[in-house]
Length: 369
Ligand code: ADP
Ligand code: NI
Image (cartoon, rainbow, N blue to C red; front, side, top):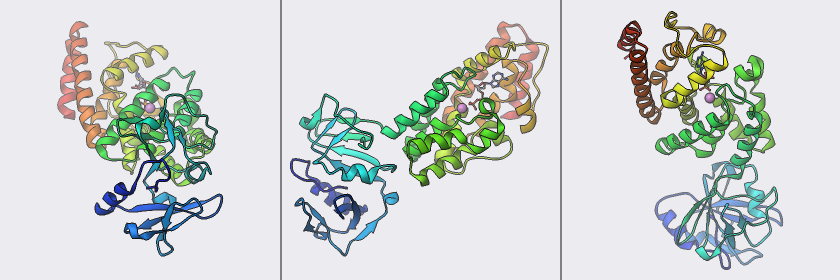
């Protein structure tokens, strides 16, 4: 929370409400011309001394808080543009404080203070995640996430085997949807989703995959907070079907969400199309009635071989994914997508007039469910 100044929105009521709700409330104190820190206040009486700008600040006895412990910052401003860029009274204190930090930022102002034209910004200016006025709410989207998205898009621009940017965007959207239901950290989830295929062993070899070289480079370039980088890398090292076959699964809720979203994108209507595209690229047929699937492939055999047809891939991998979901939101989504695949396969085998495959599917489902 930030105390207001001049024509900025008054935050006192908001501070009182947050305190009454037993929330932790932190307010800034200017340390020198460059720097400010945040201190926890218990009551408004903790706000006394005036700083050089005439703004009330927490008194000496208040306890200083680390930036990593701040989840949400509410910033009043002189004005904001539609992208969430903020114009304050100058000084760049907030831009410096927030640089490289994963703190969710909500700008507040009166609707008249929203500019339709874009504010001029430099690389140090911090963008709000949301701006709320007395009339509307604008979701601005973090600048850091945008930069990561741009770098990932550049890396995967020539990718055509099912890991292109379209797949990444779908996994990102689904992950953010799950995130709301599971109450997970939005930015961390977004980073894991955007970076989950940048070191895929199929695209960049087994060694690069183990080192997570691209993910490390991209997060360094965008100056992601080092603690967040660690959390993202930890999750990335546990995502993927072949890892799951070895019993390696993500431990954090954010990693689990992305794992579920990634697997969901391999099933359902989209999954059918991806399996078709993949087989075509590999010169394999969509269906070969003479070659039946190999069930229970272990991780090493799965990595080495490619299903003989898309239809075999359904049995060798895709129909198993529903049972590998780790979150409630993922389970619900996968159930629905699984049914679409099953229904598709029954209809397809009917049209192809291959009753032995219908029977195979019947038995497969009986054993699995
Ligand atoms: P993901 O990024 O979802 O983990 P994969 O790397 O396993 O996916 O594969 C990319 C896409 O290609 C997925 O939709 C997957 O189902 C499909 N695919 C992978 N192998 C085959 C195969 N042998 N035959 C048909 N489709 C395949
Ligand atoms: Ni993927």
